[in-house]
Image (cartoon, rainbow, N blue to C red; front, side, top):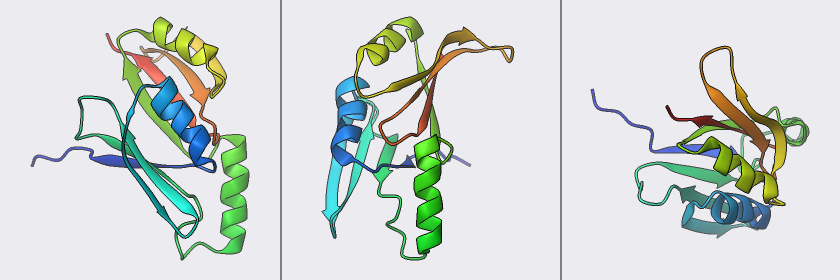
Length: 137
């Protein structure tokens, strides 16, 4: 069986702030930017890797989500407990320095050697999603 990850979804509550983080800070390319009914779905991904994408999606877009669920989702996003993503880089210290200097990300954890065998750092994107970045070895 040959299966790969094509796209993953992360919620966003501010499309322009999300673009500033994923495009301008992380350097991802914008592959699609689709608006409908006052909402935007923005597909981004690493340059030169068209097979892997992140779809930044409005958290309340699913018509099956109740008003109470929307409220809970909004609260969880604000706390950073709703969604997350694990990225990887060859240069963790350089990536950390670039993200730390940007106004679009909140530092959660500086580069740290973890007891489970990886070195990583963590940020929250403008929507509160936890973004961990591991150093490739």
